Amino acid sequence: MAVEKTRAIILRVVEFSETSCIVTLFTEDFGKVGALAKGGRRPKGPFEGAIDLLALVRIVLLRKSSDTLDLLTEAKLDRRFRAAQRELARLYAGYYVAELLSELTEPGDPHRELFRAADATLAALDSSHSVPEAVFLFELTALLEAGHLPSLEQCVVCGRMVESEKRVAFGMTAGGVLCEECRPGRRGVVSVSRAVIEAMRNGSEWVMGDQQNRDYTQFLLQPALQGELRAVMNNYFAHLVGHRLKMSDYLGALPPN
Ligand SMILES: [Zn+2]
Image (cartoon, rainbow, N blue to C red; front, side, top):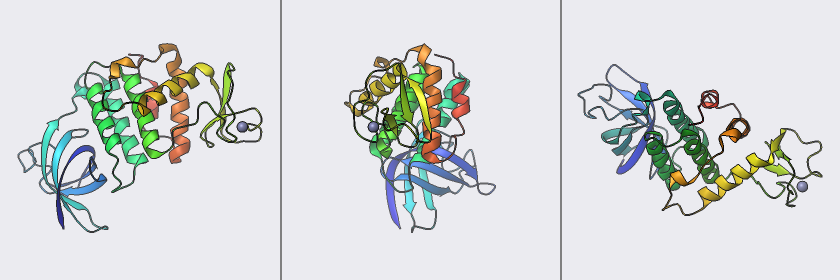
């Protein structure tokens, strides 16, 4: 058994007994981890209320062998996710961040950039930052880290540049734009406006750029594009993970700001 210290975002809390719970954590150093928190449900227990959904915590873990849960022995609160008290759209977006982390990463597979992006996104959602941009940039970071950023300029099948037309064929299963020759006969192809493809390309460049000096206020989405963009992203993630993400429908109802 190894004792490890790291930072973590709490993705899920499930009751285990009257006083204990099982938490799913996205940790900075070990990726997704499931751990038993003894006394975690007692308000005055050893964790002093730090076990809270989407909270950023500093933890001590007793790492067990592969087929048993780790033991969470300490959790100190760095930041609680308070958005729920202000606006439902921010809460839903926070849940969506947790869902993406759960669905797109494997247990014990660390993704430090994704951890930092999740931390920054939750902080942005908890501020007055615009929700659609924060969600979109986090989605693209998650896709980049998982190796599924779609091809947006070159045909995903043959590599030819897909020239500027008003609408572009986008292969959900193929993972990007398709040229006219590669499009026929493919399944899961949707027609996407050039403007939305451009927004996705700009966002992709943004997440591939300088990760240290990010200013979330510098990226803006045109409100008129947001409905179509959400539909495309929801559809793409559904193809990627094999089912529609639970929070997708709630994001559709997000106001433009
Ligand atoms: Zn092609």
